[in-house]
Length: 354
Image (cartoon, rainbow, N blue to C red; front, side, top):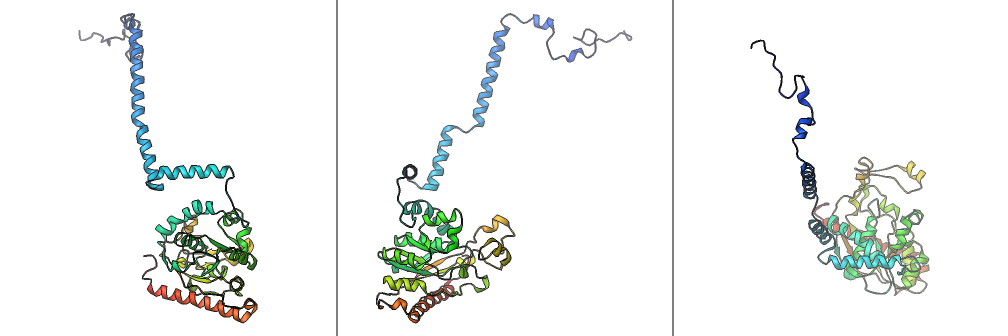
């Protein structure tokens, strides 16, 4: 007994055969003829279990629809179905060419429904713009609105256009620099948004048509000035905007904007690169170009936009626009009005970002 050889069961005396993965012929012979049906049933059960598991891992259709509806309510408001239908109708009409633009390329429908709609959350949530004196904007006829310019990037023009539309129910026809109309895509967007070339001829034509025209006389000197000179108005040019107002007899509404100076604090410039690219300046801010594209996000400064009382020009003689001294005096009056208002607003402002 002590010398007996131990043979593992089921291996027929051959080591390692007990690890085979398939059944032996003897085992297979024990399965009856109905085994194929049992195997098919087992496979079907496995497939059903896998389908159930896949369905459990996915999002039910009802939950997905609820999520989409919730997102639509968050973005479009409680009446999101009606607004979505309006957007679809708008898209259908525009694809069919059923819309109008004026002789300057202005598209009021696209501006109100898309352009200003995109800018509105930025004005309300990011800059938290406080509007004062909107009642000083005449509700009809030609008006010339004159504002200070700042911010490195002309965001203040877009915000002013939005404020005028929402508080005075009028479109602001902006007079833009030549550079705007030489840039691809930007030129088309500017035209669609109501901008036109900053020249006396276009300004006078719009004013005679009863439009509200906006001008920023500081130009690139205003938006491109260093942060150390913030809220110090630059030269207002030769007073061409005053001449246009006098020739058409429209009032001038001074507009003072506080808050735009801080969105991109300009601490430096790269003039050599600017000349190479054909632009007025290449700004350096505390975050650009150091942080790359992230540095292009404007800082959330608190804005105040105040519209002053209109300055009448219809009392002047017909040839008043040809008197350089008179034009200079009126220009200086508008400039000083805006400058003093800026100082007063800065005194009232408690903090830049709150």
